[in-house]
Length: 227
Image 1 (cartoon, one colour):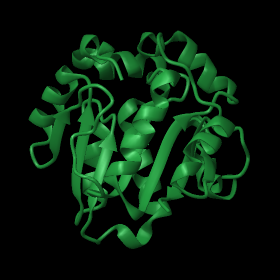
Image 2 (spheres, rainbow, N blue to C red):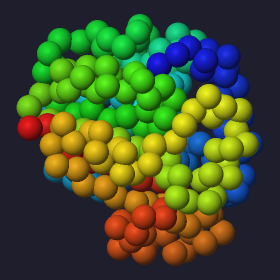
Image 3 (spheres, helix red, strand yellow):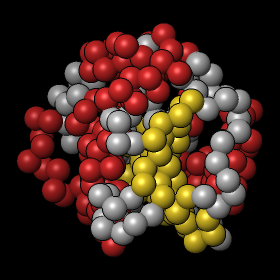
Image 4 (cartoon, rainbow, N blue to C red):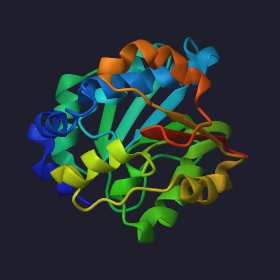
């Protein structure tokens, strides 16, 4: 991952919210939304004690919501943007954040029970995906959980926002079939699509849990258990 987010760290939330107007929600809503998705998909872990990594944590907004939802977990966040990490550590002192360097992850083998990457891989050049995948596999315990959250290029609303946001200027979205194939080294992949309705149709959101196999939600997640 590169350091381009150093330029956006201080104004990241303002910039992102400007381009999320189409949804009627803001970046904080989606950060909490993804954290709650994890509790929906892994309800038995909510009160367990385990080590969890937010890979590509940015300024730590989702990391903090995850820590709140999984109260027994030791939550760590890493990101190549040192400016983002400074903001995250200042805001959320009860979480361990660190700046990553190159494609290495500075933790021991089999250190984590759970690793997730939320919107991180579409900012990584595809030529570096393999190196990062190997590192994530190395630091995740056998039997540990891995979740990839990504933008769905099949959704026109997602593409509209993505193509206009300066934060995404050097990014490239991952097709779901690419993600499923690429991350199969972790184990069998389950893909869930979500976020089908904008805010003005929020009364329909309870139905989204029945639509996870419909491949047109604005977002998707790949879930795996390391073999």
